[in-house]
Length: 94
Image 1 (spheres, rainbow, N blue to C red):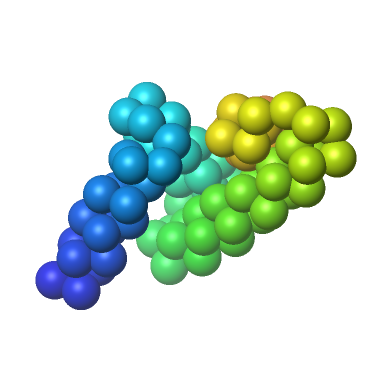
Image 2: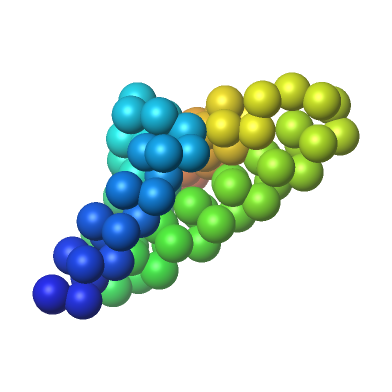
């Protein structure tokens, strides 16, 4: 637990200097919310959140480079698209 909290705080401090307060909060919450829509068990939820966060970051960077737009907002929009897709997936499972 201590290692996780240390890594989380280190990530927040480094990210705050890079992209700003609101964007860091959104980048931490959005992948977790999308993963929560996909599964209810904690282990798979953590793994899905990590994959969604990394994927939205990489896809957002590539899209922002290709179109010449803001990378932070593009990565966050990609994460939002993952959340929307997770909502549709969750609704289809019911």
